[in-house]
Each structure stands twice: as C-alpha cells, then as structure tokens.
Length: 150
Ligand code: DQA
Image (cartoon, rainbow, N blue to C red; front, side, top):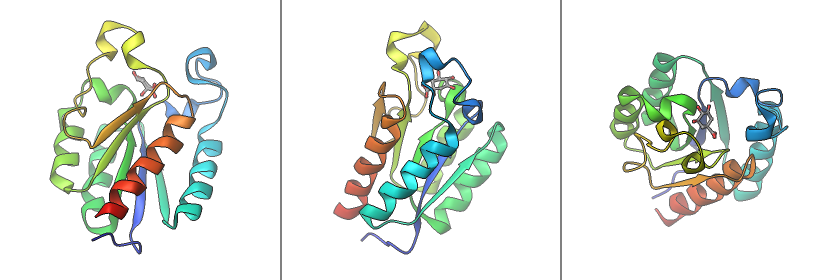
C-alpha cells in the first residue's frame, strides 16, 4: 500500500548541479533549481511530498539511497555518469527495496557507446530518457502511478 506521508526522493548525480550552463545543446538551458521547482509543483498536484538531493559523490548518493529505505516511498533517479559505472548505486537501489524510475535528459542511446549501458536499467521499474527536463516530470508521473497502484 502506498504511504503518502513518505516523500518521493529525487536524486541527481554528478555534474547535474551545472545544468543551465553545462553543454546546453545536449542538456538544455533549464537549471537544476528550475527542474526541482517544477517537480515540487507536479508532486503537490499528484498529492506527494517530494525531496530532492544532488551530489557529485558516489558515496553520498549511496548513503542517501540507504536512508530512503526508511524515510521515502520511491526514488526518481538520474545518476548522471554513475549510470554507466556504479555497481554501488545499483546495489543501494536494490537494497532499499523501493520502486525506482531512472531518468536522463539526453537519449543515452544516441550518444557515445559507453553511455548506452545503464547499470540500473534492469532493476528499475522503467526508464524515461531523451526529453530534457520533461524526462523528470514524466518520470515523476510514472513513479506516482506505480506507488498509487501499490
Ligand atoms: C545524463 C547522461 C549521462 O551519460 C551523463 O553522464 C550525465 C547526464 C543525462 O541526464 O542525460 O551526466 O544522465
């Protein structure tokens, strides 16, 4: 059963704090603060509290996912470059036993070979990629749907 007193956790990995100025031709001009504000607005509409956390550190992301097991209802995650390398983040998402949705601003399959593999792909409920900042909003709707379905 879904527990709407527990916030949905949004996790942003490394370099996503640079959105707005970082390769705007790939990632768009929207800043991370703007994305988080839009997510807060949509979460309120959907009836969920939402917490957002960004870190450039793999260990910090792992620790936050571990805490989520107790304090959050689901995880919306853009692991940034750790998508392609981090067994530790994969293991933490499995260990927290919460439904997780993976999002990417860019379509990782249209880019360099090394970005085409996600270490989370087979353990998340689903992925939404390639829609810029809208990937997060679509991902939040998808996750809220999964949580509501219980
Ligand atoms: C990204 C794709 C990753 O390959 C990259 O390292 C990022 C952003 C995306 O949202 O498109 O930092 O996760």
